[in-house]
Amino acid sequence: MADAVAATDPATHARAAGLDPARLPRHVALIMDGNGRWAKKRGWERFLGHRHGADTLRTITSECVHLGIARLTVYAFSSENWQRPAREVAYLMDLLAEFLRSEVPRMQENGVRLEAIGQLHRLPAHVRDALSDALRMTAANTGTVLTLALSYGGRDELVDACRAIAAQAARGEIDPAAIDAGSLRAALYTAHDVDVVIRTAGESRVSNFLPWQAAYAEFITCQPLWPDFTVADFLRCLVEYQGRERRFGLVAPG
Ligand code: FPP
Image (cartoon, rainbow, N blue to C red; front, side, top):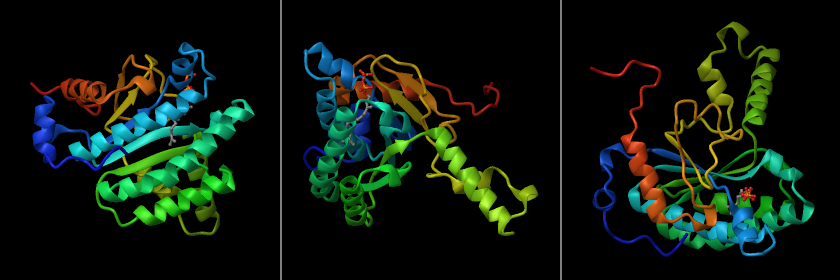
């Protein structure tokens, strides 16, 4: 995170940005795309874009704290990302461990609670250690929850949930006929519905991110590459979100 968040109250801050504080999303999900292109444009190795992407993540997390947004979930490393060149994967893992170790003091200062979802057992030991320390140290914080999706794939999440429910059924703990949406939700990595998914770098794909939780989310695409994405861009996305009419499958009123 950047510095400790300024003292303006969240509603005043939201109004100053042209937002209705009563209709802010409770849960924002971010697909942080374009790091490679950002570095390539500068003639750098593509993975150097991830380091600048980590700075953007700090800034946007602080803005969520400032606005009083309850949850921010970010796609930091997908199941498919393991197939990237070994050097890029190693760089990302080291960056992640460094981020987890260096950000805890500011998370504490800003009341941010860290969570993580995904097949975390696939992460290397030094990342798992840094992650478990950061999770433990921020566990009592009551502000914005920052969830890192790591080694995350939406289909993997659904498969893992089905396996967990099937195992419960095999042990006789649940009647297959009684399985409903609530049973599946409870078996997911996270049960929290997403209000808006924001993807940078002009891409409009969902890319296997939170298929259950984002089933009724608004999807917003914006042009900046992730390392160039600013607080002003983020606020514009939230203004666009507030301009959408959310129907949840119902008919429009009037
Ligand atoms: C997509 O850009 C981004 C990723 C695969 C990783 C996202 C990671 C970060 C923003 C690093 C910071 C995160 C933490 C938690 C330290 P891309 O490489 O696919 O970009 P491209 O589409 O331009 O190639």
